[in-house]
Amino acid sequence: MKPIAALLIALLLLPFMIRTTEAQRRGRVRGQAQSSPTELRRMADDYYRWRNENYPVGSSDDGLHTWDNRLTDYSWPAVLKRRQHVRELLDGVNAMQTSNWNKNDRIDWILFRAQLEGVAFFDRVLDFEEADPQTYVNECSNSIFSLLKKEYDTKRNRALSATARLKQMPAMIEEGKKNLRKPVKLYAQLAIDSARSIDSLFTDSMMSLAEGLSPAERDDLVTARDAAIKAIHAYADWLEQRLNTMVAFSPMGVGNYNYYLKRVLLLPINSEQLEMLGQTELARARAMEALLPDPSLADPNPARSANVPANQDEFLQAYERREAEMIDFLKTNHLVTLPSYLGHFYIRQLPEAFKPTSPGGFMNAPGRYDRDPSGFYFIPTYNPQSRNFYIRAAIEDPRPILGHEGIPGHFVQLSIANHLSDEIRKQHSDTVFIEGWALYGEEMLSREGLYPQNSPAYGQILRLTRYRAARIGVDVNLHTGRWTFEQAVKYFMESGGLDREAAEGEAAGAAANPTQKISYITGKWQIMRLLGRYRDQQGANFRLGQFHDDLIKNGSLPVSVLEWILLDDPSSVEQALR
Image 1 (cartoon, rainbow, N blue to C red):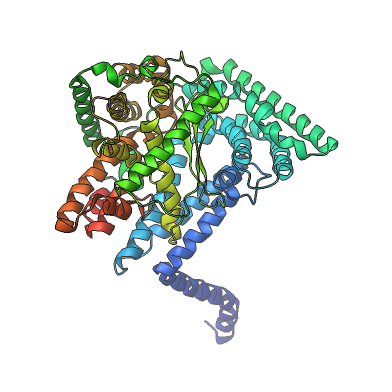
Image 2: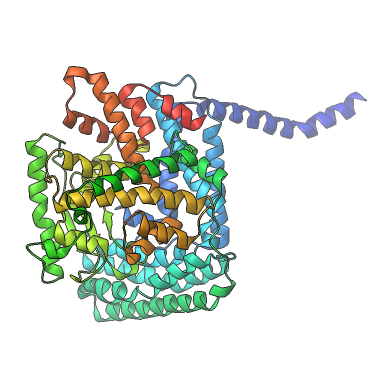
């Protein structure tokens, strides 16, 4: 080659060579940075900011009200873009070299990776935007509910946010219709029930915010509300017309189920071992019921109650009156330290829109970003003749449910988790630990003497344990494909001891929210195993209240990780990730 020609080629290639060298340099620097704990935390902080902005209704529910006037963008390009972002971030986290990190940094890396694995799993395997019509009804109900549940701002400002969200609902629902390429019939039936129960949330509850509006603003709210309700009802009609063409509920399969147990929940057991745990605990609970002098005590009966509330208000007040009694018991027996920042725990009526999948109500703890430290437990509409297990149990003695949902259960544990300084651990929400702690507390309070032996409350604890154990069998067999939905309902009735209304709601919740139902017994079993090992380690210095404080001060983390923190034993985490 002639020198001049070579020079010309070199000059032509120079910009490309410079860009390539610069890209390689950036890649090396980024690769080095991505293997540092500092970069891990930067990535996590960026992700939480991205998530909060891209899921504005979730942000509102979590006490962050920056985007109260927005709904999630469910246009298909936006859905795909979010999924790609999570996959790329997960790839970056997986590529990090952490073998030389210290224990705490490595724990944070494992936790953040599990958080991303959970999102990626639901996108890849369950694909709710295409398969679950509830996605879009829930967006509508939660978008308004999250503005109502706390007085974080003036009524006028919250009403204006509601108006903005209501105006976006018809278009969002139309996007949902386009996305639903493979809707599941069972999910569609639940969505129809919720859509047709949403009116009171919009017409009664939401309109309590309207008193601060000008006449023009109120008219704007009402117009937007009516258009939203019309669109939601039309959505229910649209789904109903297509029910016969929809696919049946499809299990995720054993492989996917085990992947979720280990990579997301960090459990050191697989689905077969999990089902055996459920069978063991179910057998124990049923036997303990049988050993009661009067086994009927396990089946709540309002007729045994000295005071049956006359109406909904008295029912709510009966719950709250028992709270002070439980707090005194905890303090007197030094069972758990209640932090000074703990807010008030309220009892509220469950909105109709949430009844199809939450027949027993649900807990709403303070959000991570909440300035208001109070929490709520939403209970079903009061009916003293109801056959609903939760209603009957609450009439006879509300303390077991109150202890689970409030103090020392979810409300206390989640309030403490919200005050962690480590952001990755603060953001982690391991349902197995969260529900395990609350269920563990039920039996712990009984054994420590809050409920006398052979009392209705003691019997209720056994029945609550029994049907939580039945939940494992339902969840595992439903999602691995061994059982149909009707088999799940029958199992709840025959083995769990539930009435059909409660059993159908439980089975629906299991189908709609995979692995949530395994959380109670699995978490309780892990906590009790950890308790025994903790006591052996502490020896003469062991104190039960100290164990509880040490356990819940670390946030809502997998118990396998808590074993590493409290006992310096990573074997359970290693077994889960092996």
